[in-house]
Image 1 (spheres, rainbow, N blue to C red):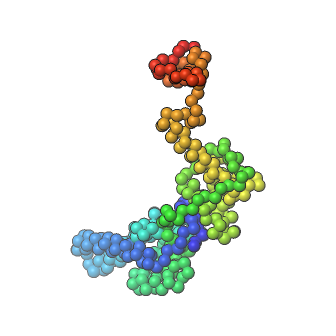
Image 2: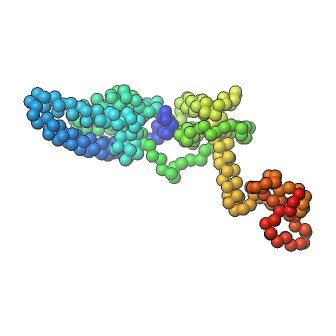
Length: 303
């Protein structure tokens, strides 16, 4: 299993893509690019019917480079490694260190793809992928990239381990509103897979995620707190807040206060909760032991 986390915080611990899934994604991409090349060629043939043979040859070469080479490079660069075929098969191209690819990575992959895919009908790419332990073709080797499986079955999602007891509740005052969902996902995936990672790689990932999380919250990581424990404690705090929010919403929807008890006070003992005026809530009169509750009239007695 690959020990990776992408720079945009979406991939961690995913398996490298094998030859069948990569071949299917490549077939989809080639079908789309081939259809686009045919359409462009037809349009250029109509537009350049009056040109001489040399000009036609130059236009043909330019269209080949633009569509069959430049098109995939542009798509992988703009989509951060997700072409149409890879999107359909749940794959993504990432760097060896797990970060998102850039133009130079896509350029090297595209240039090598002309040789090992287009000129050899994919034979070289298939052999290289079968020989490589992580299923990499020559373009991936020279570009320093890797194709990984991005989709994870819901049944394989593990629970986040709890933080150390001495850190529970320590971060209750943190403002978590500025933390994006992508960072939460990366932290959760790290915590559920940290025991599967190499010790040094896992420590490096934890420190990087902890620094980013501290930057988002505006509070630095406390001295002496390991990065992994800090991440677990903050995730635990967020889960506790979500649970309280859901509980309060459920109690409010059922008409019962969040505390689970109805406040009681003698009639006329004080003003309604929240002060007098519109929107105030009247105090519920106390019920004498053994007596019946007074009929609800909707009238709040004056102070």
